[in-house]
Length: 318
Image 1 (tube, helix red, strand yellow):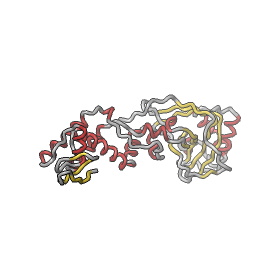
Image 2 (spheres, rainbow, N blue to C red; image 1 turned 90 degrees about the vertical axis):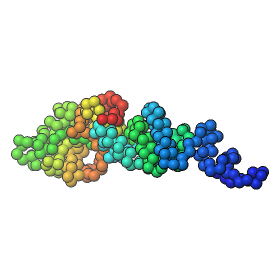
Image 3 (tube, rainbow, N blue to C red; image 1 turned 30 degrees about the horizontal axis):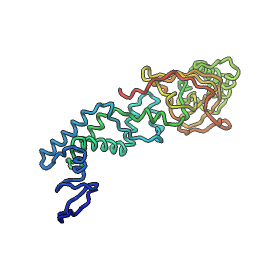
Image 4 (cartoon, helix red, strand yellow; image 1 turned 45 degrees about the horizontal axis):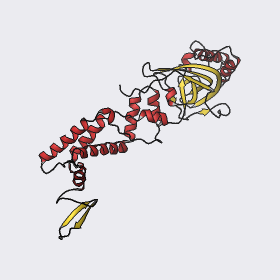
């Protein structure tokens, strides 16, 4: 902070941290002088342009790996919408969404870096033209490589996911004339779906689960499908960037017949499933917008065991 002070001869000066400044010097110029950096005088438009170029050159001289704008906190986590973008194999879209959501913090971090770069070359950032300041901040943002998604995915708590494992049941039941009232036909269709998903259709527990779903009072229309529901980590459910697929084995998984139009859902548990998620059928965060048609929901959708195909670090560029 600059403070006026009168010397022994009665002359008025300003000081920064107790040091005399020259007439007209700003706080920033005094600090630069103390640090041994020659301050850049900004008087004319040409001075403005030269000073702006000095700062931009300083920013360009910093290796990109050393230019990080960490604008998130440890408690920052992904929203459901951002998590769905990661799950679908498009982390760059999730990154853009986070940047928009945390825009104020992101701009403040970029401005701090721009001010530091200006100080390195003796430029008082506040004396630059506002347009030049904005361009310099944009330059910082365009060069940094740090992305918030990796950390935020790691910090996000486990969530409940849903993923379809069938086509619409109206199509799955093609060839059955009275699927709405033929419970035995429904059970056979469901056993076929569960069998494709790795369940042992001859297992008594699997047959009982299929029978329970077949008897649920849910219409088998184009909006009705079989889903797997589980609780786990976003990182274990996201698609692999190399294949846009993910194979996951479950022990003690929950499956459901769900009418996505009405939210009506019937849930059962099966001993084992092996599911392949892909870009047409990715996992999504459960929004809770459904109603159980049979009894109480389970206390937890966490399987006894999840074995997800090994993943690789998130790919953040296209």
